[in-house]
Amino acid sequence: MAAPSAAASCEDFAEFQELLRVMRTIDDRIVHELNTTIPTASFVGKIDAGQTCKELYQSLMDAHTSRERIIKNCIAQTSGVVKTLREEREKAQDDAALLKQLRKEQTKV
Image (cartoon, rainbow, N blue to C red):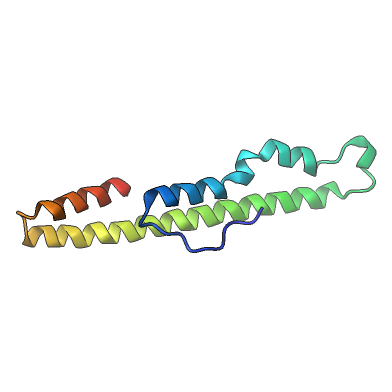
């Protein structure tokens, strides 16, 4: 199972959650993946179990690495936005809209 190649958008949190859900598919289906990867007694000689297990392992590691990279990227992006909003908030402490936006971004982080 390949990870989505599209760049993760951190702007819409629901969209980001959906992307993570899709990227978790291989983990959510691990029992099925193991059952289809490890050959039964009748297929032992026809399938290289070691190679298919290595391929499954590599797929899992690739999926985990992709998710970790996307999550860390979004944390960094959103933290940058929070920092900018805090600086703006210090200059305009009476701006309620700015405070609301700051709280929204802090919640995302």
